[in-house]
Length: 119
Image (cartoon, rainbow, N blue to C red; front, top):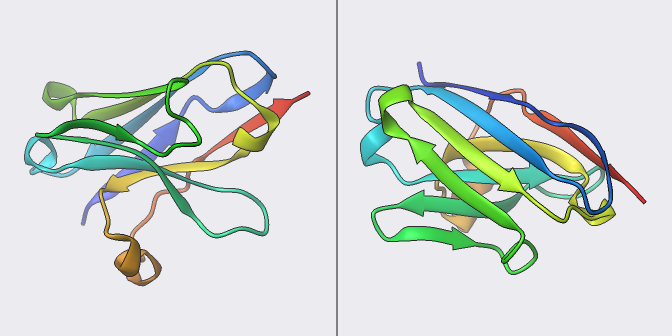
């Protein structure tokens, strides 16, 4: 079964930076468009960024501050987060890139990594 292990979240003051990692146990990692998602308390999980053959894409809320990258040889996905804001506080997950209308039906998620940004 495909497994995702997210790591390197933490506490940071507004304006600070973090670099998240996600190790994916999947044989098809290199051929999949991969993505980061986040879920803040009391809110639905939302798409943050994706990277595939077409290059990286970002949600408007993080564009210019976050950078997604990948190492296919190590089945690892990264998210460099700069100029963090309190509204970025959430549990961050990685997964294949999922169509928005299918998000609620996906059950295979990792435990996520918590990012907390203080003002």
